[in-house]
Length: 104
Image 1 (tube, one colour):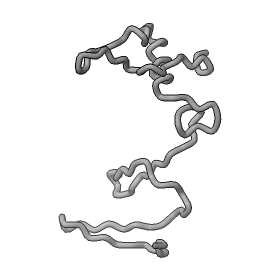
Image 2 (tube, rainbow, N blue to C red):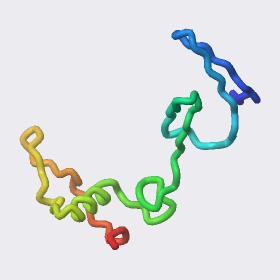
Image 3 (cartoon, helix red, strand yellow):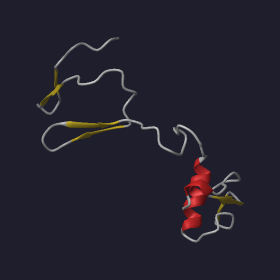
Image 4 (tube, rainbow, N blue to C red):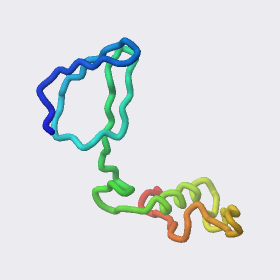
């Protein structure tokens, strides 16, 4: 259903009302919404980062990113385990590999 031109006024159950104005169209779904003290709403959206699942290029797995952060903290991610249901589980599972491109 297409969104109209607005502005739209919404009434809440707490006897408040707020106005919504369309300022941009064609954006991806928002990542989060925050209501500011002055009544405005801040909307954050996904951004194509240099690493991770939404990367433009050089995509890495989160386990690799966690392994790299642990390495920078001086922790060997292959030895950092915890017991779960009788098994030794690693934070980086079995696929965590260091990402040398982001280590300067």
